[in-house]
Image (tube, rainbow over all chains, first blue to last red; front, side, top):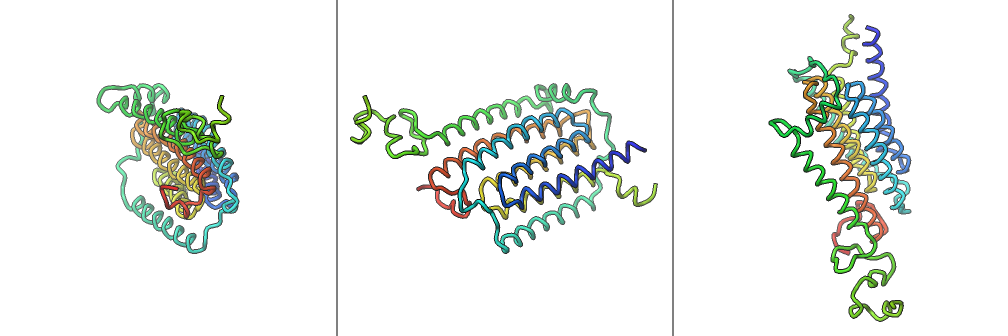
Length: 206
Length: 110
């Protein structure tokens, strides 16, 4: 009974923290602060995962989301500081429309949740080690196994890494048509063959 | 156990409501932000709520098969890929146009 009460208190504390911080993420006018609030939301979610006995997933959440994704977002905020968006304040109309849409979605979803009887809700025995269970499931090639999505996700991550490099690189490699252009005028020219360069770039070349 | 206590004890529906509230907050941010990175953050909140729902059903359904947790891991991996590509696009766009205001991202060429 004591542990039940403690679990209930913890659920409401973590849930309220997650909701309040998520509101801060979408309403904060300074994006860098929003990124820090996002980090706190993800940490609260990791706590909720622990309450749901997903210990390995909570660790992954902290490692990948908090340690990796939020850091990337902070980089993105700092690399794209534009003066006209330093204070990102939406107009009243936009706020009202967004509020109506999201509250409408929430009311609809809550109505569905509260009026439908879920046949689950009993909960079976947990696996002795969720890390072992997840590992076996991810590499299971039999029916219901996840080995194919696992491999596809690895390909997706590789494609994302290569795509990120190609899209954001400053100068194009030789004979590479995909580029976003150089920072300085003429910077992209230094990788072209000599006879195709305009005269001003040729002067600096040996 | 009183009625109020039974009403307040967290069960499946409490958890699902929490996930729905988090998703709606992310949706609000998605619709109101003008900065592309802010929209990316709102999408992260929504993805996180979706992953939470998978873990909730994993816990209340069949915890021994860890299907929901595996799906949550896939969501985290896809979110990582999305942020990498999104950040690359925003940095390239900022270099070109000196803005990441989504209201002004309405052309695909210079």
